[in-house]
Length: 114
Length: 114
Image 1 (cartoon, helix red, strand yellow):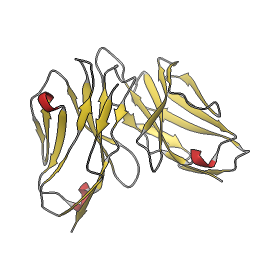
Image 2 (tube, rainbow over the protein chains, first blue to last red; image 1 turned 90 degrees about the vertical axis):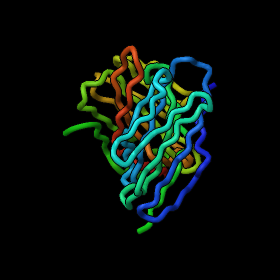
Image 3 (cartoon, rainbow over the protein chains, first blue to last red; image 1 turned 120 degrees about the vertical axis):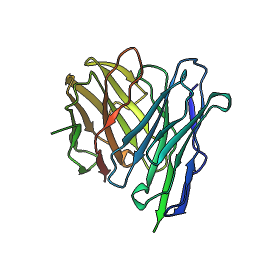
Image 4 (cartoon, chains in turn yellow, brown; image 1 turned 90 degrees about the horizontal axis):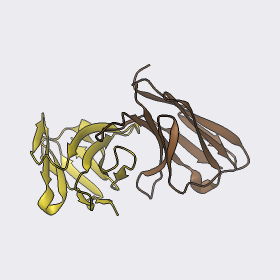
């Protein structure tokens, strides 16, 4: 069975601090895809990144970076120099069936305080 | 209109009412999804339509009835709902191919069953 765990339910940081959101997944498939989404208070999930199981390179996009480690089944997300606009719920997700069976983690609520 | 749109944004209905949620995607995708997001549970995938054919139904009660007349439109027909069905209903779309592509979400319909 597939499962995604986001152990941090809520995190609060002060603006300009760095913060890492953890994601641990379980799957028996050798080919799978991992995703991060952001859900601001407006409710709409915003796609951030997609990673396939064969690409363990870390990725950086502006203040965002992702660390994929197959050995520990983790796909962690770091925000550098956080800003108030980063306040949202962040979801990690796993898919192994071409989008037909997304499994989302429970989400981490991030609050960035001014 | 761009992206994925959903109407209405808010809906209050009694347990004996019949209503429908509408979703439209303007991205040229070939798959559409309904998710339920309630306060105490992770995002739950309800229905998947791939090339207008329903491919997944994750044990959703029959009081929820999906309809996909074409690859751009998706409906969720509701009847005799229960108060526990109150939730945010999210629609998403993606391009299904030989890889797993990200899903793009609409803003959701906030449903309250009284």
